[in-house]
Image 1 (cartoon, rainbow, N blue to C red):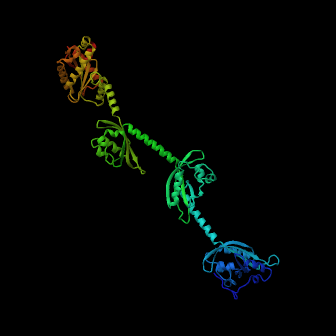
Image 2: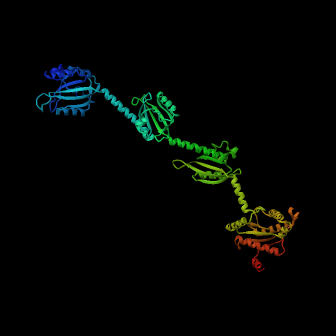
Image 3: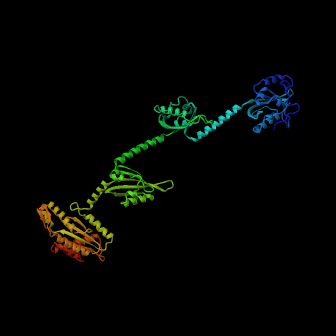
Length: 576
């Protein structure tokens, strides 16, 4: 795109000749000695063509590498190349067409092909003729701004790099330090994080907000980051908020002094107050948990998806010294093969079910809760559980239950237990059952003669003698006073009831030992027998009533015998 010189081009033209030798020669004299490059061209013909260079000063030659002889007679296009901005060139051409001054920046090319930036200031030299006269010459003053453009580009790139770095840290406070540690920049987030105005937070001693006890850590951290390329930290410290409270912060440094686009140390600081508070709460919670598990008979445990113990802790483990050793890493199915209920509970929990149960291990009772753990996809990844030793409580509950359903004197089931059992007979639709109703003959005479303590001792002995006569499935109970019952269930209950009555009567032929009465006392029972058969159903109370009627029949017939209930016995008793 370079113009070829016209005939006569290349000859030196002095500044006086360029301005026609008139008074303008003084202006040419000044331009010749200017530090900036000067190009003098003729007027550009309207409608096309390019202005011809008629003079350049020495500064131009030094800037471009061309001699005056090489450019005079040619056009400024000699300085243009592929990188020259065409829009700016068009702007210059429009100004020349309009006869107006123009100022812009342009990328030019030296004779060597090296690019450089210039600031152009082009203005016309108009003859003294009237308005509307075209300029006689154009003077272009060009200043080399290459270094300034490079610095600006480097600064812009550095700003872009820093902004990219800052963008990575979002709401965190960002501090930019010079390579020697001098603060260069503090992000506006400091106002939101600490409550101070940005100007107040960034001026003065950078350690004035830091807790005095933590200041040495900050100094040590900055010293380390200056000496260490790359990332250092983290370091935790406290800073005073504008409201007077102390907040916890964590800083990490990244020494990017070797990065030509940054050449600084970037420190990102985030508020970790909530995190520290959560850690403290967790520490206290952990301490409370350890205090609880260390004091209460608890066992905390966790299993993976295969039922292998991954965690086990608690004072309750002390109850199993041999088994507690080496529990981690072992399967629950390996440790408790003889406890199917425990295994079933764990299988149910591993299948996603929350299970609550009281299990028995080696004579101990544990109230246990099994809770499944789910992963992000909803699959069970394990089980966590807590087991509380309730052996003492269960023992007390059993004792209270026993007292509620057993006679305190003879330890036989009491009337409440008997009635509960009779209700069960009806619910189970028992086809055959029998009841023996016993009443000790003349027991009142024992109380009257020897006292109630002797009577109580005799009742205990009678209960023991009765037990000796029973089978393993027979249920004996004391109704109260000197009355006892026996219930038999299953096939042949009616036949067995008669044989049992005879065996009891025979057993009571032997005296009962009673120290309160002086050694031994002979006493016999009267027994009534009632049955439930397939063709004769009734309630439990009906069975008790029938046996009672039969017992009174036995007493009426001479005592120390048994009678079996038959229909009509109730009416006969009513008549009596």
